[in-house]
Amino acid sequence: MTTVFTLSQLGWSAFFQQQLSLEECTAQVPARIVAQHRSCIDVLTEQGPKRLMAGPAIPAALTLTTGDWLLLNPDGSFYRMLQRRSCFSRKAAGSRVAEQLIAANVDTVFVATALNHDFSLNRTERYLALIREAGADAVVVLTKADLCDDPAGYQRQVQALDPRLVVETVNGLDAASVATLQPWCRAGSTVAVLGSSGVGKSTLINTLLGQSALLTGEARTSDDKGRHTTTARTLHLMNDGGILLDTPGMRELQLADCETGVQETFADITELAERCRYSDCQHQSEPGCAVTEALQAEKIDARRLANYLSLMREQAHNAASLAEKRARDRSKSRYYRSVQTEARQRKKGR
Image 1 (tube, helix red, strand yellow):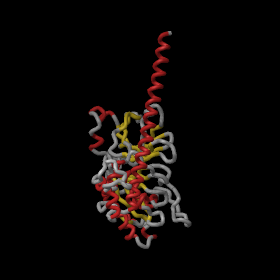
Image 2 (tube, one colour; image 1 turned 120 degrees about the vertical axis):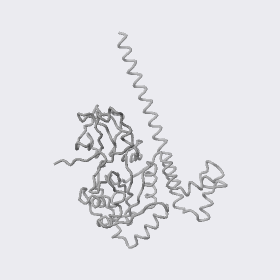
Image 3 (cartoon, helix red, strand yellow; image 1 turned 30 degrees about the vertical axis):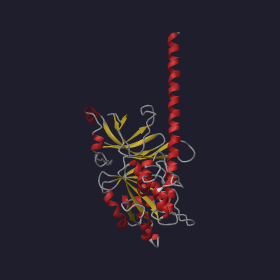
């Protein structure tokens, strides 16, 4: 028997409803992407699940991702995509110059970080920058607390990044421990779980869902890092009504065009930078640099400043590379259109 869900259970809100015309309210069917495959996408509607095959019916220039809302025609074919409330993206892994979408229309992101040798404040700040750029709320979830001798010490380190940051320590195998995350999993809310491979994301999600919906793998005993067991982005409907998005563990998360997110994540340094003598201060050896003065006075941490400068350089470089690629693509498109127009004109003149 197919389970049927209401639009509100799938995450529908006034933000999406107001994008519909009166005609679309009666003629088209809202659908949310719950999984992507190479040649098709799976969606959920109030009438149940549907599968859309990739093809000419979906514009080639349209990049869809898990969490997107679509409008379908009565026959189940693609009509159009709705504007996103939030969208997570990164520079594609490796040397390829391209933007890769991660998820759309997410309310809260659980940043899963294992309390073991893989713990990294730098990586946590990188995720926070991505989340804040997208406009979602972040909750840092410290996993594998049962295997750590001093979980409170790790929590204090993360909390020191921002006193307003929500940090929770859990044992992903213990439902009572994971229950501390339930306030963010209320009905109609969409939660994403981001984290590196092997931090226990799948175990955490299984406990949140109350079932073994995802394959989990044992950690390698040599370095305590888990195997990468999730290979696709999928939405799961939780028993309490929330919507949970799982993503593959990310071995590489390069930021692109993420200046606002970085500045918000490092608000203490950003505020200091506004007091520098020069507006283009690089915070190295320039006179009148409020940032280096604070560093020397031990008011900010050297690791944190180094990561801030590194992320700002990275996102600026990747943003410039993507902008150049977009400009080249636009130039090629104009050239191809001019060639096609010229060919049609010659054909008519015969």
